[in-house]
Length: 152
Image (cartoon, rainbow, N blue to C red; front, side, top):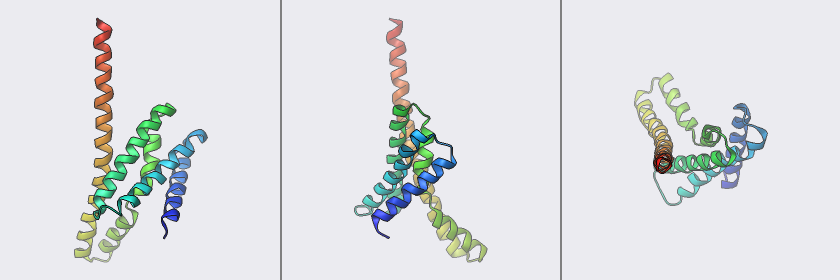
């Protein structure tokens, strides 16, 4: 599948989930572009980084930064853009294969794919946590500074 088709599919998948999550019409494009950009980052990093887990991590970092920035611009909760943007990164085929091997009682293949799936999920979660934590530290720090100077 060509990169352009993959990016279009990521956009459409994010768009569909944005509708499912009742994101307002004025914000649908922003939420959908987040998913397309996240998948684009994943694909571009594939030319440089051989590890899929690392690519998932950096794509999650990117989409979280994207969601935080546009949430402040659009005055909307970050999750509106983050959840839709993360959708293309969800390791659906890995989850499917893990369950298929479990149902077929192929325990060695199940163990390998389960570990792989958990690694991908943890990379996504870690990318989100790193950016969200840094944003909250920085914005919380500014609030403390503002309160400090307001007292004086």
